[in-house]
Image (tube, rainbow, N blue to C red; front, side, top):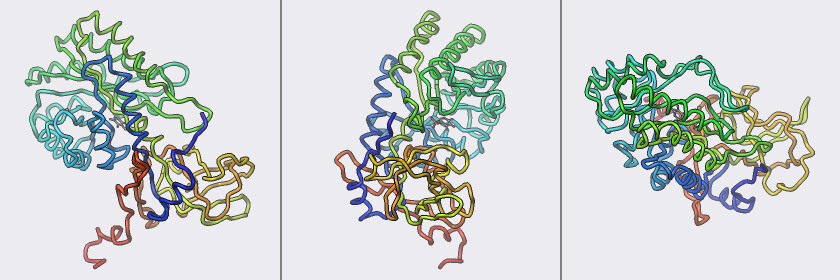
Length: 416
Ligand SMILES: *Cc1c(COP(=O)(O)O)cnc(C)c1O
């Protein structure tokens, strides 16, 4: 599907008068619409809730917008818990889905009344020791082997560090019940960035069948099933996006076929989406500052992998639009690079684009999730600002850009 920026050249140039490039820009309207569609797609399930994966876009303004749309947070670290708390998102509106969890983080999660999602059976005793077993508890499942859902989705949970085996998870529920837990959930994340309407329904069916087994074999009734993240987005324009309504309907069908006949029709469905919620609703705005003609044609921009790391570390494709040249022919082949002293610091390699002139504004699409948040400070590069394009067309800076003082701040006494 053709990638159309949610902003025009004139709009973005006006914003640049106030905030210099590079910056991440998010569409409030897009975020709200995505959340509303998700809730609509799962409205058949009483108690459905999305716990937004904070790691995807850890910004309080974004978390509050999502909270207004009914979403809680999925946290996996102390600072994510702290951010959620400060946003007023506490108690069972937090899912604490961590792994290799330090004691202090379990303590904080318990204190906030978060739903704790245990990654391993040994964490039962660890949690009991450090914070006590709460009444509501969740366990993360890993069936091992290979997980396939239709022709486009394949992943290998058998190689993943997460979750408990089928034998362990049943043992875990029995033990947790003995220790006083009263409400139980199952969580599982078996494939990432799936561009397929078949992943969630297949995962759901697997977990629904497990819930029936747990009821019959362990005498433990599951109250909620957390399908976690994994619904992806098409980064390339040749792919069609997922249809959340088809996905919701697929999960409903499995629910009706597996849970309802087994007396488990009250189970609540939870999700922990990150990428699906935010990726298309954010872009990295950057300006062409150099052109270089050597063995290849290079366009140097003022952003680098410190602002968006996915192309550098995964070779990930991110679509690029040269603003104002949306309809110009893509008859120039470029590598679009950042300034890091790493040859992988390229937003695009051999990309066909319109002729780029110095000063042109480029937007790098689908950077709203796992974009800013993966940023780092290599080469002393600073993290950029984050700007919110509000529904009324105005803008708000929701995080300022780092300054050199920020960079030096942890060298106590070195910088003033
Ligand atoms: C990363 C993560 C998510 C979000 O994944 P997306 O691919 O962004 O949807 C959800 N839950 C857990 C436990 C995660 O680690």
